Image 1 (tube, rainbow, N blue to C red):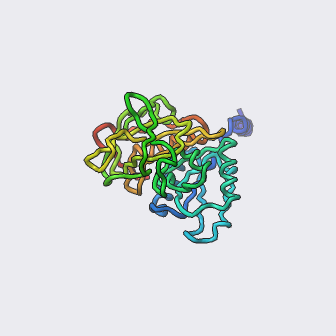
Image 2 (image 1 turned 90 degrees about the horizontal axis):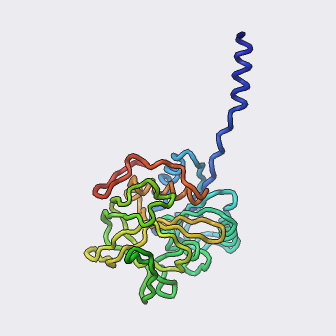
Length: 290
C-alpha cells in the first residue's frame, strides 16, 4: 500500500470520526456580596472548567451604589447561570430577562449567600425556594425540616437565616439516587463552614438532596437543616447549595464534587461525572485545591 493511499485513508478516518461535543456555556454572576466573591469566583470558575464540560464566563455588576442600568447579561446564551451575588437590585430589564431564561428551561446554581439576595423579588424567591436575612421572616414562607424520614414544612413565626460558628459537620444524603448524589457516600464530612439554619421561602417544588444537623451546642436549631436541594420552576432546573462560605469551605472535595455535578444537572438534567476517589467519608474531611 502506497504512502499516498495510507495518508488518504487516514484523512478519511479522521473526517468520519464523530466530532467531540461542544462544551456547554456557563455564566457566573458576581460583583457584590456580603461574602468574598473576589476570592470565590476564580476557584468556582476553575472547578467548573476542570470537568471538561463547560466554558465559563463571568458577569460582574457595578459596585454597590453604582449604575446598575448597564448590567444586562445575555442569560439565554448560557446553559447554566451560577449566582455568586447578593447586593443591589438588578434593573427591571435584567430581572425580566433572568425570569424568562429560567421559565424557558435555563439552568441555575444558587451558591451559598446568593440565596440572601432580592428579598422583595417574588420570582427570584420562588426560583431559589429558600433564603435568609434581609428582613425575611415568616411572611417569606415556611422553613424546611427533615423529620421522621421525610421533608416537612414548618410555619412558626421567626426570623429567616442564622448560623453558628464555623466548624466541620456531617452532611447526610436524603435522596441518594438523585443524579447529583448517585454513587457518592450517603454521609460525608464537610470542612469548617457556616451551617445555615432557619432559612425561609416559598419552598415549592423542592427535591431535598442532603441535610446537616444544626447543633444546639453551636447556637443551632437542633434540626436537620437543608444543605443541598433542587427546585423546578417553569421549565428550568435549579441546584441550590447552602455550603461554601469562602475559599477554605470550597476546598472541600465534597463541596467541589456536588457543586460541579449540580451545575451539570442544572444545565442538562443528567450527570456524567464519575464519583471522585477523594470524596470524603463520614469521619474525615478531604481537602482539594480547586
